[in-house]
Image 1 (cartoon, rainbow, N blue to C red):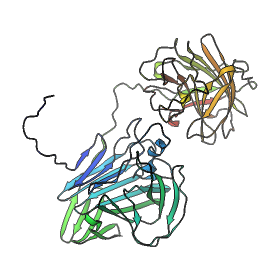
Image 2 (cartoon, rainbow, N blue to C red; image 1 turned 90 degrees about the vertical axis):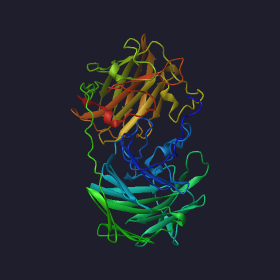
Image 3 (tube, one colour; image 1 turned 60 degrees about the vertical axis):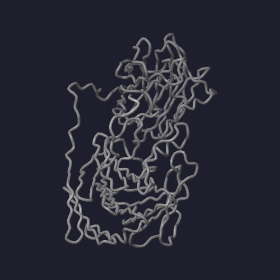
Image 4 (cartoon, rainbow, N blue to C red; image 1 turned 180 degrees about the horizontal axis):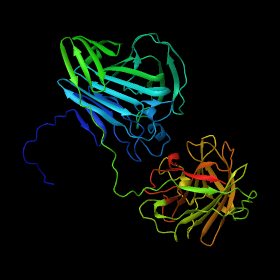
Length: 519
């Protein structure tokens, strides 16, 4: 690049903008920046934070997106949760892996708006000269629990004299949980930071919780956050956010017959929304915002390379196998082959072929358990010792970086159980429960073979009531480790691999499981 640039570039003048490919709607007003995340879920690094609201105003990052922080500390799992973001969630769990869409975006006079949709949830953000209006709505076919966290910078507090009572919020990173004993009318949360003020006026029917959780990455102290909670098929959470000097531009907020009224020093704004747009009225002045967007159809390639759902057969065991590393006692009539390029997840190098890495599995069952024999072709075995020094590479179990197996089963009750299995010296097995799955009873052993190794297992899921003809959701993954590596080189996946092995840990999406027919 040249050492000097020709000309005198003008100062950067940021404006409101919709970035559809990134799924980010940005509404700017003076020194205020607000954005709504309403686009595709971002890959392996993406967080479950659809419809997250970010706010920067008065030189303060009031409502931040926390990012990730360190990959080698346990709080990584906090920052990867919906609860750590200013984003809605349903039924007390983080958002599922799915895309959000932007339904509308428009600018007119001093106003702008954006509406995002994620499943049964919508979030509308309206930006005006004095404040932001935020509306989160639920429209569901059955009763759901809607929760919306507010992670506000500074030291947020309720302006009135609140009475707090003990409450529950199921999350291992959250403590000091309390519920506000409130009557009717709005609740106002105020905060001050770096000489600036913020007021958040909340209008809703439900509970307001206060709790403590990890602060932003890099901060040593925990932080207080608030959470709105409502229950029902339909719900509306209205918030008016005042970041004006002194945070005193908004005097009152009301919701009546579908109209949101915001009192300011200059008059009363009346907001009403429809499918096709949003209207703001103050006296005889009316501003209409449209910009309804039609989602583009999903891209469909000319050549469809996606595998059909993998299916296999699990014969009834003639008798319980001895589980001594041999195939004794197994019905070998229905082997499951794992030896194709499209069953491989790679790192730097592509699949080397079935001569270098492949597997065959035999699955049997009886009234007490599921039995698995897995024979792996791999010339050089690399098993991680139990007493090996911690890798500290990321926040994943070290045993994924070893030759070994991952097995998953959705049992007859619909619950998912998963285990990570690594062979040890003397024919024993080291078994670890997969994160976010139910425990499963496991017994067995392994032996080396001329071409690799063989593992025989007995698996008892939490609920096991099998019947002939029943279809079970099942998956089997074989990890591949090389002696000159710190991380695994790849893995074979019975239900179909493809893609990359990085950031997968010991997880496998249950939607990808194959099916076993019990015979």
